[in-house]
Every structure is written in structure tokens, then in C-alpha cells.
Image (tube, rainbow, N blue to C red):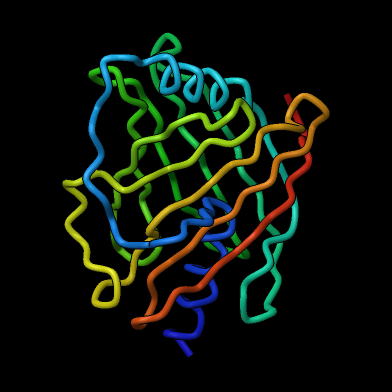
Length: 182
């Protein structure tokens, strides 16, 4: 029962923090001298400030309510996201460091993977695991990546997809969120 609840929550998180990666294996991420994409990704995350609500759908067909609150803190230098999937609360932080947007997710699974976020074609923020993430796909249960489609954020809609390595398999998720408060 507890493992089933954890799987549900992890899958829900995956959808919220989602990522549709062709390969879910963490990859070495090189920091480019051109920080334009990272800065644009961080600006896009900051623009999400407020509460977003929707339904998380997991690859096994389960659904649950989800809520994400983005709050800009530390004089605009960090964004703290509180996400609730079903009845489980988790947190994610976003900040610029060394020309990269660094993201850390504090998961119900007890893992804390870190990611680098990049804005792709001005419409999606892709979060790729950093080289220092100490988890192994297929061995550890953790979020391996996520993507935010922000192309409709100005019209109050956000699409989040994700993937979690869980019990040696990938669990994918998707949530369509609508902005509830500023």
C-alpha cells in the first residue's frame, strides 16, 4: 500500500515536473559561455509566479489533482515552487549560478536530483540532470527530467511533462495547469 502511494505520488510529481526525454540517462551538461538561453529560461520560470492548478495524468492511467505555486524570492534571484500532487507536498528551487539555471527538486521519493534548465525555441524549458546528480536510472527511484511548455503561459495555461525512474522502469506524467492566482 505504501509503495503504491509512493509510486502514485512519484508519478504525479513526474508529470508536474515532467520531461519528455528521448534518453532518461543523466548526461554531462556543459555550461556555455552564452547564457542567453539559461537566462531566458529563468525569466520564463519567474513569469509563472502565482498558483497553477490542474490534473496530473500518469502513464498507467491514474489521475490526481495537482497544484503548483511559484514564488519569486531573494530579491528575484530564486524561485521556490511548492507542488502538491494528490495529498503530497514537494518543493523545487530555481536559480541562476555560473551562467546556468540550476534546479533542485525535493521529492517525496527521498531523492533530491539537480537539473540545468534551458529554454528551447522560446516555447519549452527542458530540465536535464546535472553531471553531479548521484542517482542511477534503473537502480534509484528519482525524477530523471522534466519539461515545461510555456508557449501558452501568457494565456494562463502551462503544460508540464516528466519522467521518473521507478522500480527499474520509466513512469511518465503530464499535467495541463491553469493559472488560479497571481
